[in-house]
Length: 76
Length: 255
Image (cartoon, rainbow over all chains, first blue to last red; front, side, top):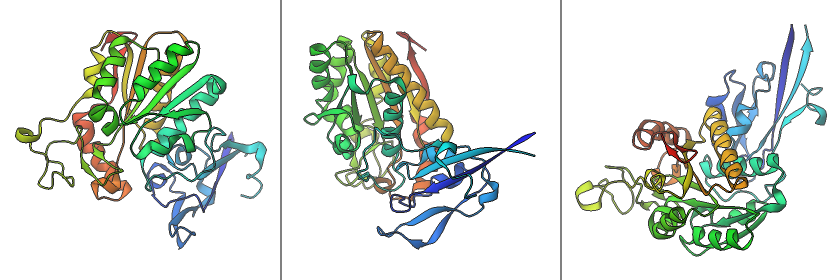
């Protein structure tokens, strides 16, 4: 069966660190960074990249659309 | 991971109809999602050149800076009146207003009700967060009973301040209104449903059906003095109890 693998790219200067994307990620891929961006916000990043399936849940709730999502099918 | 991040594998990115101007909203505010899903609907329907938006006064006063389509901005509360003029001048255009609860349900109640009663062929997107966000968290008509705000510091008292106004149910009873729904954007499921409702609203405009009214219940974490996740939980518990989600009027018939 083909497996789906995904990845997100966060625009760290746009992210305001609201954390809305964290509870909607069913695979707990996203965490908040310790570093801050130029606005002083802790931005989202992929803390568990292997778990991401590219479902776009995080991107559709991101008010600032800081997240873009990529997805591929992997034959297993 | 690096081999996944290629342009041909991209499944989601910001719509081109939102400008690169950083949104002026507080972190976690529902306005950003509401803006984006509206623009995504317009892009998906391919009606960019035929859509004219009317921005309100309130937090979303700068909507014309963020939405990369033809827009104008109305005096406080008068967006439905301006939209009426635009829709009558260009009957083939898609005209929408984007308003908050202070604009639509307080100072603009008369314009809202009469535009809805006349059945103008417009879409009204109403973002309800139960407070005046931009001016510093004062009590709005939609503020819930017992809810604290800077002008009701001991909580809203029904006896002296009246009950929270259900403007959406109010306009649903008017004959000119064809479609009324209430949605939210705090989770992926709710945001996708809200997007479908907005799409339906614009399709009603195409069919010349009259007013389509979509309320989006949103959080206002700054006004409510909470963090974004807490405010969303508070919204689910309290706002949804008074403002239940779902369709209120479909195809001109009350549910």
